[in-house]
Image (cartoon, rainbow, N blue to C red):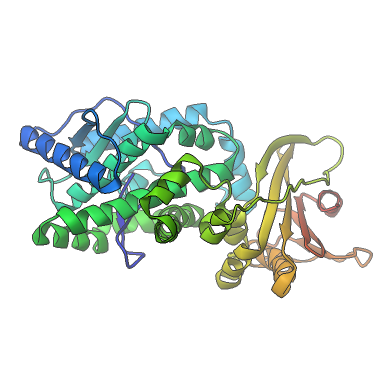
Length: 421
């Protein structure tokens, strides 16, 4: 999926967090359909040649007006949410971590986030769609088409059904790793195609469109929850930088290798040298438990991206610096009636005081995001904080060298039990 953002100096498209790559039946634009179809075929041939990928038969693609495209995106949401394993439980976790407000579901207003999407490719039907609100198929729409065409070629070469499986499953790190490569590659291709094949006027229009959002698009971006915006930034910006690093090392062939054998962690996207060096994450398991009566709901990887976003509530600069120290992590959630408890455990390098930074920021996150303050329990050896934002939970943090643990529960005993090694 694509859309342009003013947030970076290079023109980078946006996608709603989760990589919604699907479609539904809809009506194509009537204007100059034959000319548009011919142009799509030309762009597909150019992109295939640029990336040295086979185009042994034509790709399926359509250009849609606003109403048709909005209908596509609405059905995407319904279909994907209906088959997701995580679903509402994941949203509850985001709320507990203060990434979302209790009354702020991820897709509270579909119209707003749909406004920032300009194209979509559907592996299920091997078809791409481009949004053309003005019915003119401008230079910006051409570049969107190049981006989505590259997704179609990726699908033919290595299969993007894995991306859908990861998105609907519980391996969030595998999803982020693959999605960043998929989108970073398409960003690099759209820019290379524009430089080589667009005439100066169309390229100028594309660059202008990438830096100047409409009032509606700007409002839509500002309305996105911070967690969603961070995932957009990671997938496209960090993904594009990852692809740039691979191209410097081994050209497009290295990018093809990453599509076939993608990074298994977000840490490798943040730090491409890890991927190139064969990084293997540490096996980390949350061993503490909340006590009797609690039922485990989710057990998820807690990656470098998760660490950055969480600790970024306190200090984004310091949080970004800790991603290079991440070695492995896990998050577990439990429920007891309408109560929720969470456990986080992270393995962090002790070099350059990184483990100490993560430990301190874990407490500072709760102070900043939950208005946390100390619990008056002198016998507690470590950090114990209670929320001041009315949520009624307590955070316990325990740190032993490179092992950082946190428990979040409705009372000190529950939180402390989860933070045990």
